[in-house]
Length: 413
Image (cartoon, rainbow, N blue to C red; front, top):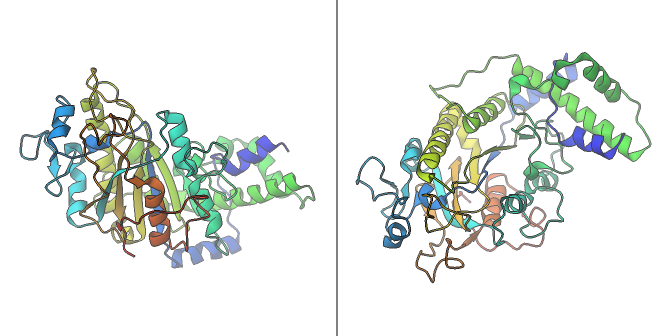
């Protein structure tokens, strides 16, 4: 077996076929159902969302000066006006489905947050945020995978961590198993091809090898086949969202629905990663952002509605690689910027508040004279989620070389 095949076994989205569950597996599934655990859902907005229009500082005259065409109007100034949050900041009107969560204090916002690295490259900035080590391209594993290693479980579910994507996300890459499941209903081994299934069954049944790579392959295949059986149990029951929830069509809605299905199936899920794309709004931003935020707001609202009381155990955390320029460009868009905004939705959230130190938008306050300045390192937000929501004793092993500066307090202690 080659290292490439080994990586594929451990990190790719293997499509799973139906297998008959052994009695011991059924006992394990029953045990999972009896134990509810905290869950973190990471939602990555790829392409760099414009945080200044997602959560607009409408109280600043400078915001309106910098964006004569794109700035959201002050609340009450028409259908396209910002939705007031606290007298200073306002949600983009397409995010209106999130207002009830702000009002019941299950939604919080952290503004002027992001990576301290100055890169404006999408590839590098996404890599740094997913590795959790800004500026260091030598780190191979992701921050969520390092959490799984730092917070081991005696008998972890094969679906303890799932990447809802075609292949395992960078954030979940590493030594801890984290299968990729884009759609639960399509998760079948080799697309259902018998020859692929037989090959993997043969690998699964091999006698323990003394060769390290083959031994690790056997361990990976064992985990894969356990995941196979567990997903088969989930697939056997048709899924219907509860409480009148209606997920929008599109990537964000589809992926959050898959996560809700896994949560409600009690498969032992603790970490779920999903992403959405299209946030790189260099031209005609108003139309593009309106559509994307509309889907995101509807999807998050449907997810919360669908889970009902289970949201007490769930935290959804949104993120994007960097923000966008404070000044609009000549194509009615914005360019690559620096700091941004994050949402925290769910159980334990001290919501109804915009957290973070607002740096201002005057020329001298802008980063490099063009971008919203950073006042909260994204690792502080991630650390707070891991420690206060998931109970990690300390995040030093997850974010090597970084000493957390502040806790914004958006989660209950």
